[in-house]
Length: 149
Image (cartoon, rainbow, N blue to C red; front, top):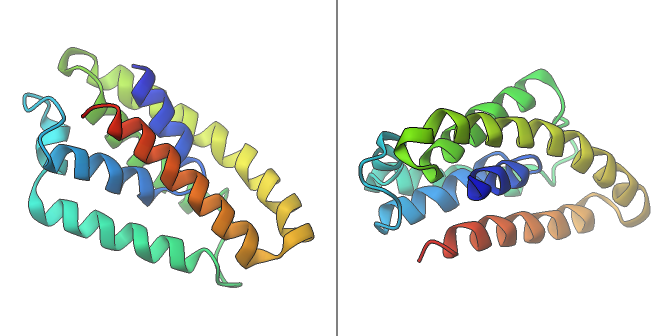
């Protein structure tokens, strides 16, 4: 259940990065094949699609027109992607709990990371602060999923 919680925390700053990391782990056969969420995320087209979406999100975050992560649509995206990835990382019998833990962690982390990013943005600018946040989020999601291997 710890993995579900941790992947939810990383979804607080980037909604698609954890989805791509968990999808890649599922595609590599590192998740429980009996878990329906893991089976879906492990499909080759889903794995490729989530990587493309994550790359687009990383790029789009640097644009001045990028919406704040705490707008309703941003929070909804985090709840959905974190819930799905949290469920995929949980044991089959605890999928709902894993999804709920991840979704709750993502919402809390979205507000915390938003406020930290605003402080960093004032000091370092949008691109530099975004690149640091990208590195931390990608690294965190990779740590969670690499531990499965």
